[in-house]
Length: 191
Image (cartoon, rainbow, N blue to C red; front, side, top):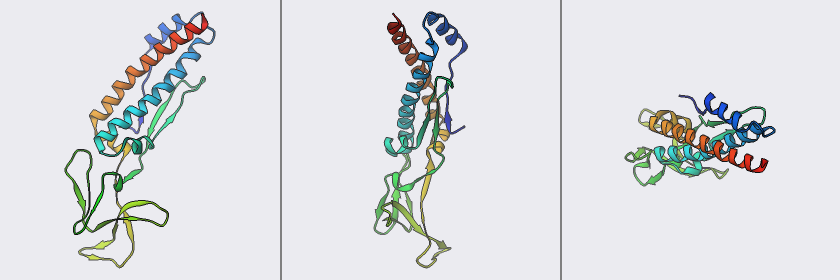
């Protein structure tokens, strides 16, 4: 599955829109791009909610990682691009334990742990879950330390079939509703 969400308008709907907006100058250009852009914005919110529920991280943290490429009067397509960059483990309700390292929760699953892991704030202000490099059962000096990462937003979306199917279903409905609202608005303004 790709890291992009797309929904299309079928030919039958385009034919109906063309007939309905026949007397309105530039009618389709005044209806389609704004409706697509509103749907893309609403789709990002719906996708963020579903991915958040599946992964266990905050909706706002997911939403930041979904970019929108908006439709224009010339290009009647919008796309939601889901980040493939892996998420820091700190976003998954990470907690430091005294003797066992760091525990975290992925989605609704039982808490897992990173043995020998620790939560630290870097000089830049970045907070994360880190772990020193180990060779077998021995730690390798003081350095290097590595930040621990989990799945990406695109990974959560593509692995959870219910997530992808739900987002696509909701977005199709939203697109139809937004087109109908925009048609009513344009017809009312045209008189």
